[in-house]
Image (cartoon, rainbow, N blue to C red; front, side):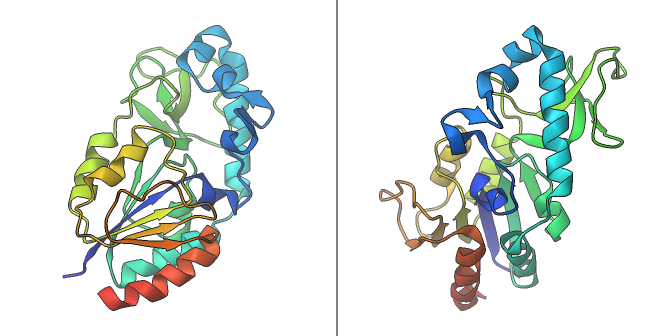
Length: 230
């Protein structure tokens, strides 16, 4: 039986593939205030702007490539039962070859009903057009969890964390809740590898191995250290 390695990834891993996040620039995401493009209120007030914004982000995601960090995580499946829980809305983990991924904040390459978020659809091309409707007759919107919305996959993610034999945190500041609280579900005795150029405040946790490097470099270091657990 392979040991279960649970990996929580954040914006830092995708940044090395050229994808920007709003935390890079004091609340601005590609020049927009996140409250204008990433809230239910923004969608109610100006759905055309929100749709255009995510259509552009989707193009960027599709043009981006998985980096060495994504590929290193996929390689770890040869030795571990790897479960990736990501805060990122891109599909770079999938394209790198990882097979067990929970997207906490949705997946930008999918669409959903703005009436029932459980109705999810593939997107042909890069765009969701205004006037494209779900089976209930309501407008399709990005399959993304906005600020102020519930995080449907958080309970699934917490259950996965509770069963971890090993844990790795990559490229996240642990600033966004409820995702940041997932580390509290990792059993105390479990080794916890923390990879980030600026390690977040994790001193209260046990069995920490800190790797203060970028995701691409840090994951190579962690992969070598993990060999002792195979």
